[in-house]
Image 1 (cartoon, chains in turn yellow, purple):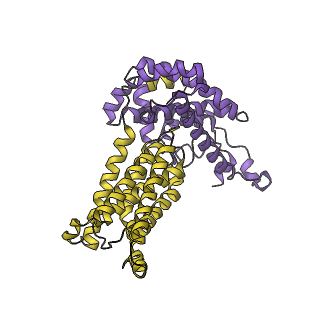
Image 2: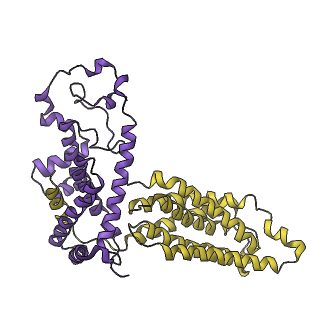
Image 3: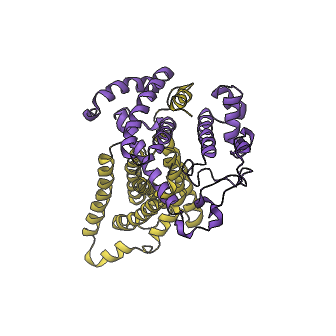
Length: 211
Length: 215
């Protein structure tokens, strides 16, 4: 086909362009992933006792996971659009991680020295990152699918950012059934689970995000 | 965000057209794509100097991608930067495909001489439209039959088949490219894996490059 003919064909009845496409694809993916992770967490691990919600503990976890999901989602959206600058969302993501590290560090510093290790490891340190990863998989599939329908040009980075988004969503779901109380625990083991999901995204990115 | 000065005149000509096209002005869109086509041709020509035959194909591939992905354009950015990022992505994709293809080539010394024997030439049948059409995937064949032979508009063809207009456009483009490739028996025209199809009725009499045969 001649290029002019292609241009004619593409332009004919092209109509207006959909707006805010990145948000319209990523938000449903994140919300579906969140519902899936919450449902799986409550079904498989059981919900935390209701009185825990009167303490700051679950809210800290959800605040952290939610803020990180927003920052990583912003970053993912930028990486899904050719030539879009990514410095600010990336900085925002790092700042959320650092903020949680500071909260965790302060809580650890205010814990009596003898109890610190117990606070840091809790009862579930060895399973927490894996649970977060497992609960993130629906969100990971959904967000990679959403990104693929946009136009990522840096596939590994886009996969990583989508993985962080999915990991935060999975961590949000896990916070509904995680019995640990220390912010230091959250800062280390939640973050590790989210980073694991990010790595899976980075490994999958170049393969599944091609278009 | 300031519009990048490097893109200068081209960007200032393109941008107003592109913004009008975004709100549904098809004439502006046609003009914008025309501008982009010549810009992309120059961009890709420089980078594909060893393979002039690939340039126009990749220009078209990129235009199609610009069209399908136009929802990812952010008005804060220069249109040309966005378009070039997509062209570069398509270029990298071509290199990757080509590297994989080239690794399938056999060294000429290893080739079984019998494969080089003259094929019975069946030119008439090879160029027979129906035979060629049979080698196309169903969706591509239908899209071409409706729009190019049946004279329907893209919108009518979409309504007829239940596919979206974009899908019809893609199928027509891919199908015509594939037809051209079948006539030329060009090994690079269709990426492996994208339109993987079983050997059609075309296969027996057709001459194919040696590296495809050896799979």
